[in-house]
Length: 488
Image (cartoon, rainbow, N blue to C red; front, side, top):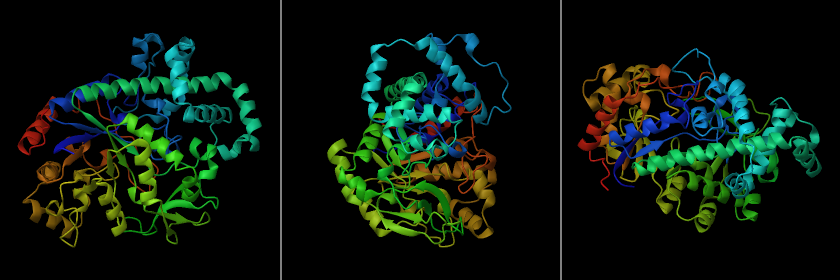
């Protein structure tokens, strides 16, 4: 990576008109501001359809795109909707995503667009053929899920819950139009995403996508590929740490990597192939899972008594590189990382992750302090799982707060974001990524996610004009000062 910088902002957090950010004009306006600010990267969270608690890390599919992100205004521009089809509602808040509206209303509007679309144009047919390896199962899964009142698949009738061949054929026939609608949704999503990414690339902005390690239990991936997952019903999680004394139960199904190896990790090869086609760089969430992952028995109420199981490590990545080519990977290697994980990263040359909020602890020599960095890493003030810089500083105990002030100089609360951003930009890390909340100096109630909780997350949304040319100018000055402008 060249020395450079970028901004972390999920698509949902853009200032969209209808309760959520989309792949419409607001995405293009944001790219324009990134360019004006001398930035070269835009990092987003996973783009898959969200599942439980609206989390993008509990996706309904590892391959599909989130239809909530489709721009309705763009569908008006291409004649699939009329202006009068657009919703005429007032949203409770301009700075929170309205997921209820997306689930209750947006799908109905997209079905209007589908009714206007119903023509077998060659582009749509080509899309269906190219993406058939995941699209066929996804569209059937979503149509059947809708038929069974959105219940998880284990609450469907037994034959289709087990994906018996005769049941799949029955529902494909019974729900043929609904299945086609879900394919149409994906076609529109990927057209809009392609156009946004192309615009970003033409303006010197690379997109950093996010690839979760696990899939959700109530996902088409688990439903359609049960043989690729652990047969005992064990769950994913993480062991106790300073943040969660009982550990965390994530409840995703864990992989049967021995079975996956029998066909050369075909599912993973397809997944990385898809990710490489969508993004310029791929951030792998929970990278350490490929070396070893934490499994908890299904009857456990917490994650205290889980155990570490060896992952496929070099075997999987060698296979992927042979099939897909060199991967433009950023590894999320946070937490208690072992020597084996560091060796795996070093073998492939993948950059790891540094988070400044983790730097100021009792040791006064944290690996996250800038003087301990090497070039091949990505530094953040905080990630989507962290508090905002101001919220973090306010919550520090007296010792850590004192050390922060000693390290950075006298610091008022309102200056914390600015100080952390300068630390990130001035560090030797090749890439500095700043969450937009810290650029805007927002307090803790603007954080994106609080791990271990399920309410109030993934809702942060910018108001129109909140991130402005003024902020772009500030970023440009920083990028120029600390040598983070990429010169073509």
